[in-house]
Image (cartoon, rainbow, N blue to C red; front, side, top):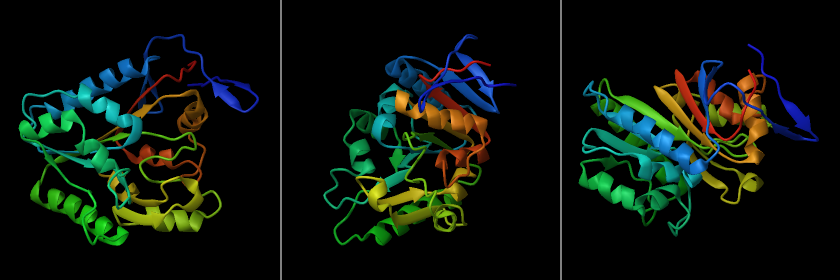
Length: 263
């Protein structure tokens, strides 16, 4: 397989001539120009996973930001076997900017609860420190795993133009620190991203959890993200340079994007 691309200055873009769906390096790539249509497509795919007839409980992790637009497209008459958690959290004591609070405010979340679904909450409580919240998040995930033998885990990832995903930002300047934080045995990391993001106090799932996922769905729209997506497909970047590369460890990856390719 060969991937051809065109560059103008530092901007990469793709052309696509062979239909909407392609399998690229074991990843399913769906090129859908309209982001709302892309969200609807992903919502349907995730709904199918939630309605599988194997009777197994499901833990569904979701990123914040634009990924939340996918949730209203997820439909089921019964969410009784589904638990939802965020993939990462911003430690904001006002609960205005943290991801779970944004999720909780959605009307979809009300319907999800009414239909039997449950949450692993990362809402900040009085007296919480960043580490206390990280410990509670970790404990919630571990409790679900221990109580649901044979349960499945899937996740919906977003991606930034720098290739960050979940709450994991690139550390090209410090590979040792990156691996210490995100590529050890702990399924949750708590750290200060400093100037890497406007919300620097972060709690995030790590590669140890990503390896447990059955499917990773990726929702990535915008010209500014295309270079990072191409680098992911080519697969030559290190994870501390392009954290999205961690998803190479997931059994199945479904990418929905407006970026196009030539095969």
